[in-house]
Structures are given as C-alpha cells and as structure tokens.
Image (cartoon, rainbow, N blue to C red; front, side, top):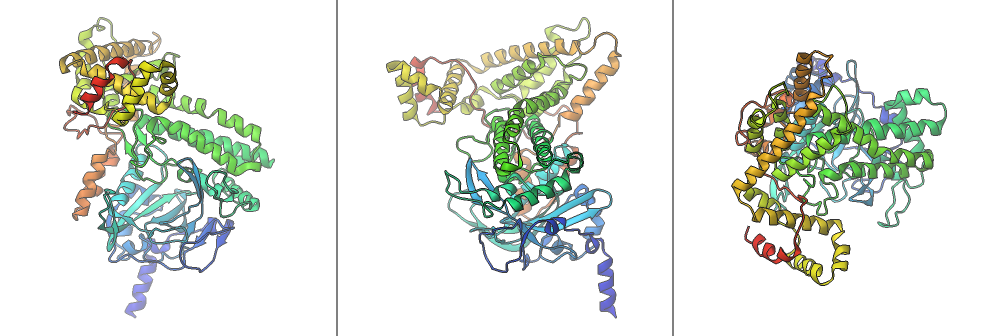
Length: 633
C-alpha cells in the first residue's frame, strides 16, 4: 500500500536511523515517577520525561553543518525530512531516543541553591557516531520538566540565537564548547520582559539542538551535599554516597578511560581524575577564554562542565575595548564573574567540586591540587599570549611583564582587544637599520585609530558610587586619614578612587594632548616588542622562516572576528522580523581566518564599551570639583 511504502521510506531516512545507545540512563539511577509538575527528585541522576510538549508549526532557523556532521548527518539528511523540525525540537520522538532531564545542584553567586536541574532542557539520548564517537543530544526549550520550578521550560528566539551562534563561534575558535546543531522556531508564544522594564511581550518559542560528549557538570556531584550552613538548603540526594560513587565511576570510565586503565587503587584514580579536571579541562579552558576576551557571565558550579567545555550560554560577552573589570551580566552588580575574576572563580568552583566529592578524594592531596590551579592556569595563559605576540622561538622571563604592560596600555587608551592583537602582526620585523620611530609610526597610527576618544574615556571612568557616599569617603580622607586608609583598602572603594583619579587626569588634559601621550606610550611599547622579536633569532636559524612562522602563528591565534554583541543583536532583530539570513550567515566559519585588512574600526562595526578602573594617583583636595563635573558628563 501507499501508506506502508511511505512508512518504509521514512524509516530509511538518516534521522530515523540514528544509532542511539543511551548509556547514561543504563548506568545511572533514573527517576521513573509519573508525578506531574516540579518536584524534589531524590536518589536519581535523571528523570524520565513521559509527555512531549510539541511546538506549533516548528520551522528551521538555521543548522550548523559541522555540528550535524558529528552525528554523521548532512544538511540534506535534515532538510529532506519533512518531520525534521519536529524531531529536532523535541516535538516528535526520534526513534531510539529516551527523553529525560538531568538532576543537578549548584552554588549560584557563591551560595548553595539546592536542587536545580534541567528546567528547560530535555535529554534525548546518546548517539554512537562511527566517525566521531558518542554524542549526547539535547533539546533546549522543549517544555517543563520536574526541575522547571516556576518556569515554563521554554526559550525564546533571541536567547536561542545567542546560544546557537556562540556555541559554533567558540568551536570555530578552537575553544572547547558544547555544540549547537540546529535552531528551530515556531508559532507558539510565551510572554517575556526582555528589558526588565515590567512590560511583558509575546515572543516565539524556539529550541536549540545541543551536542556534547556529556552535559554532566560540577553541580551534578552537588546533589549529594548535606544541609548548607548559609542557605539552609541541601541536595536532593543528600548523603547518598553510593550514588555519588556510581556517578563518579561512570564519568571516569566513560570519559577518562586512560585514568581508569592506569589506576587500580580507587582513591589514586579519583585524585588523578581531579587533577585532570583541574589541569587539562578547567585551567586550560579559562586561559583560552581570557586570550580571546570572552566573559561567560554566570560561572556558577552548575555551569561548569566536568569535561572542560564552555557550557550554557546565557549573558556571555566578548570584550570590545579591553577592560579587566568587564562584566557582561547585568545582574552581577558586584562583578563576581568579571573578566579578570574568571580564573579565581574557576578555582573556587573546583574547591566546591572537591567538597562534593569529599571522601572520594584525599583531602590533603586535593588541597595541593587546588593550590596548583593558578600556576597551571598562568602557564597556559602565558603560552597562548606568547603565540598572540608571535613569540615562538624562545621563552623569556620578561615576556610576562611585556604582556602585562601591553594590556595596561590597551586599558589606558581604550584599545579594542581583538583588533589590537590582530594589528600587532603588522609590526615590522626589527631588521638592521630600521629601528627608528618612523618605522613603527604606521602601525601605531592604526592602533590609535581604534582607541577611545577623550570623551569616551571620561564616560567610561565615571564613578558608579552614589555622590553622597563618595563625598563622605573623600571628606574622611581629610578629617580621619587612618579611617580613610582602612576604608580605601576595600576593593569596591579602591575601584571608585581609581576611577576618580583617572577622571581627574582626563579633565586636566585635552584631546590633542591625550593623543600625543598615547602615541608616545604606544611607540615605546612597540619598540620594546620589536627588541624582544629581535631575540627570537639567535643567528643560527633561517630568518625568513622565523618571520614567516611568526606571522602564521599570530594570524592563526588572533581572530579577526569574534561574536561581538552587535553581531548577535543584528541577527536577532532580523530574525524577529522573519529574516533568518543573518543567523545563517556563517560568520563563525571565518573567525580564525579572515584577514583584518585595511578596514577602519567604524567599518568593522566597533562598538564602544565602558572601560573601568584605570589605576592612577589621586589628590583628595580636588574631589569636590570632580564630583560636580562628573554629574555633567
């Protein structure tokens, strides 16, 4: 019959023949309760999802060909299947899939939050690709789960576009990340308040198909924690050390088999695992973030992958102008997850993982492993930064200072992080007879073109503390110097004083004077850099090969394009008006390859961001004038 022929043809389609092998559900305890709604889920790592919650008229926004290839799927395999938008949005059950949601806990902004879990994510299963190994596939935004709490389990188009684009952009940069294979939107709407203004608007429900070897995270091990002294909350499986051991065995056997195979003693094996998570996964990952100016935004323990993947793209951001205190999350008022805080926050999260593993680790050894986190991170960071400067022939102790001084200069002049490093490949090699100022003037001119103006720097250095508080502190400097010294040592206060000092300097100069100083500072640094480049050649190597390698390494390490906020926003605005071309335009495919060319910063779409806390001296007697002036700018 025609119906049976259609059924046979459908079964032959690649999407219907994905080789599922849902190992996690076989190896770990699963909650089979049919109780509806959000609930506490004890003694389980996953909860089955019994009922799908289909979208209305799902349609594709975009696919990532490289992510689909991890499942041995092509674009044609997907687009030729009329049911593909339903399958890849969790609206229709893929043959072999077993919908579930993962249970985890976490420390959020430093406080233990108890049970969290996949509140808007549905695990579909694990696909065994003959070419690329095993991949867990999830749909994000597919509806409520037992972990949705007060949410509706839906994601809207704008947040889904950001996750889709950044997942693939990070992968293109060579930074470990979960992947996004497809993005589906629909005619189902939910209301949201995108500007936090109290005005809710209808937005399209959308779903991202995410891939990773596993989405297990630090918080997966925190479901076994007892009652927390500060929050009063506990994990849903508190005290179930048997399940904790089961989860740990699964993670090591499945994803760290070389550790499993080389350690017969359980505690030695577990310590080797913890060292690996520290070194190769977490320290290396955050070093890679720092070297492209990426800020995650919500580095809670539930957003830290046990495999060292960039996980859960919420309020992320790539820096425009370099700012060590860059914060991309509007709710992070204290800057806990600022750009410069990311390494220390990752170390803090590792300490929480050690606490969660508890008796599975040797406490003294775990402490020693944690103590080595920052040196390990710094080694990875310095290695990448040397490549960004094309210093590939030798390592010198002074390299760290050269890099620090570059970043300080970038901060002081409001230089663009991505463009500046790309421009440094234009610094001429220090050939004999070409060491004068005129040799570096052209590249310095290009760098200065994309630095901030004096008015932009004034705005960026406006103190954020209330005028009354500032006036009180500054009055204290004159009336009670001892007390002032104690207060000024507090990080929040010292930041404001640094801002004020920098603002004072800017108010006492003009644009021409500032540019003259900036030009001199850049010429000085570039000259130092060229002297360091000269030492790359010890006289025995082929100079032409050394020069070629320098440019090759710099251009492959310094992207010319990153997913700046305005790029994502342009794609979102177009998509919300029915034009998906900006989402589909594969900007991330050229992240590491496109030349910067001779485009001016304005043509690169450079957006000015706030630059905070440039360290300068200060004269307390002049604070009242500055406070009055800063109200006007």
